[in-house]
Image 1: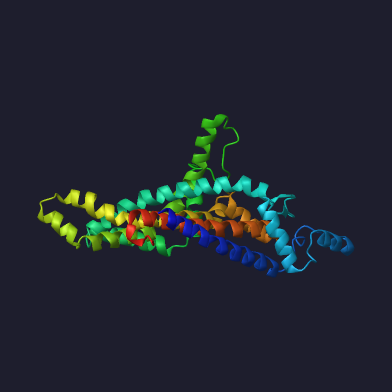
Image 2 (image 1 turned 90 degrees about the vertical axis):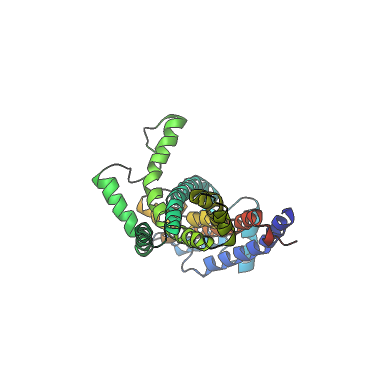
Length: 319
């Protein structure tokens, strides 16, 4: 087990180096420069040139890349030219919001998808199965931003049940009130994003259960007189969940990296909203840091999934 983890960690090192080089080069290929969104049209060109020279924009690309990597090792992600703050400070203020929203989304998604997937697989061909399949088609076919906008309009503005923006009520004082206020602000976007994200889990679990019903160990259990509900709960369900649990690492990182739409619709100050705002203002230092962060997060998600798979299925461990 530990050899597998160590091998995967060592493989990640060149992957991160290549990723950082690609992210840096793509940022350099983007039109404009970091000062494009913050300098007015009447600014003295000599002053602009002096600012670019001081920022090292006239240095060769490999010199800029080396300085950028050196700063990364010291925890310096650069300076945001639009917000006039260190990028690390800006990300530090946003990342917690996105992580909590992604975790709540994942919990809601599994809480909805697992019972539906089990029901559809167990009662294949029944009305319940067809209803769940139709629900799956709808959540798959309707664009997520349409669902978010409808949910925001109906539950936020028409019924006034949930807040429509922010992460916490300004009147909340104390840790307990702040905690519940934060949860209250996340429920609507997390519930909608979680329901939208059930599609693959429902379909995958349904297929696994249908496939498991014809396996030899299930026929043996039935032949021994094991009750049907125990066959499903102790044999079929447990084995069908293993691949889904292994896929959780990818889902967590995917939710964090794909939070752009839900955070912008609900004015939720997280990484996704920051990413879109930084692109509009051409704040390249922030964009580069977010892309690099989500790329590393994807690699960590792959590592987590491999670890879970090696735990649940020892056959994939490579000695």
